[in-house]
Length: 224
Image 1 (spheres, rainbow, N blue to C red):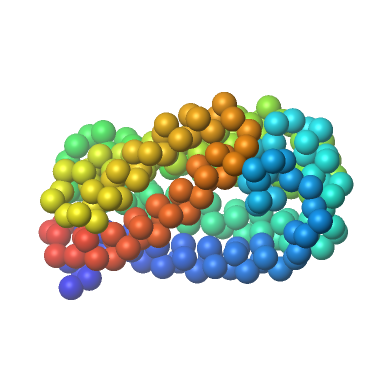
Image 2: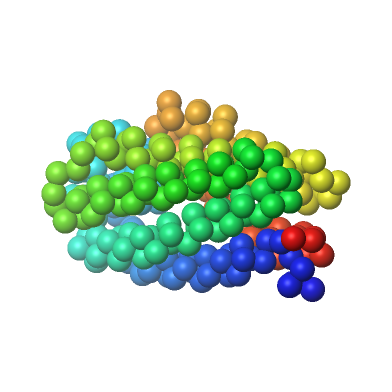
């Protein structure tokens, strides 16, 4: 029964995470992106802005965005302020549950890592709001906060993967191996400026649902 699931709180948070994700997806697709300019390899305006190589690139993108698209992206980023609270809460709860299972002190401290991710994501969003409002973007702050967020996410998932790889279940090992891919892919993306950045980000869009499914089913009948 679900009451015996050590990942119970994370599983409930996962439901909320799915709801906010769908909300963001609907808002993000409410305006057309036809005819806009994005750097080579990018198809998502928000990701293109996050991984922008400089302020000139941001300006070029913003000039090509319609007012409707800018409004849609701004609302989506506002929702993202809630999203970052939910997805980081989910990660904290998962890592804390693993600590309760393993009693390894490292997981106790790793459960704090998503707090750094949360702060970095919030700082990144503030720079995006500046771009949407036609204000100057601090490209250094944007770059640092973006990479702290993504690499922090990578390390958080790898910590989860390190636990999962020790189980005998096939699904757990697939999820674990998927988390291990994030770090080398992220380091590659750091030194690139093309489609690999979107591939890296999209991997997390796969990992979160997989992790949520794990908390729903694989944790059932574990003792707290």
